[in-house]
Amino acid sequence: MRALIAKSILIIGMFSIVSPVLGQSFATNTSAFIAITSGSSSASTVSNSAIIETEIISPYAVLKTAGTNLFSRISANQQALEKFPHLMRDIVEEELMPAVDYRYASYRILGKHLKKISAKQRADFVEAMRHYLVRTYSVALAKYNNQDVIFEPEQPTNGKRIISVKAEIKELDAPTINIIFQMRQNKKTKEWKAYDMTVEGISLLTTKQAELNDKISRQGIDHVILELAALAK
Image (tube, rainbow, N blue to C red; front, side, top):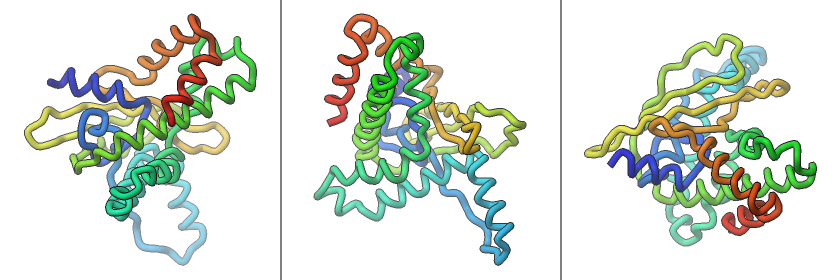
């Protein structure tokens, strides 16, 4: 059963950062955050800046904040979503995608092909992948069903720019699903974003890289871009 759930997650998504839940298969996973509690406001501009900076540099806070905002929006728009399911894409674009390093992940997926294609093809691939992810997350989040997600406690990053954040997704009468989010800090902005997720030992990025690298070798990058764009509709 655990293998079936993990396989379903792999099929439905890639490098998702997510939070307190999801319904079935990847839905169990496309969202693994929990609300981040904020302290009392301070009149000091320096103190406010320090809080903001802490949230930016902490990968744990990035996941929790994104999850809080994402699921608050979904909960507040349940009736609208029933009538207009496409609204979920807007929510994903605004609340989830800012925390996903889809450009870095796309480059990693391209692998050996990255330097062999033109700048325009790279840009087109990144954009197609972003739209593909938006659709993937939107479909998964439509199955949101209130599972519990437990994250490991906040820890110092010790100057590292890539770290792993562990989480467990728990649901009554179902096996616990172990997830590891790969978080990367941008050199210039210092922001942390998720670029990969490992579910029960299987890396979603590595899986997608193997799938698309083979297609690019056989059919060409332009074909793969068109295919991703078609899947995103």
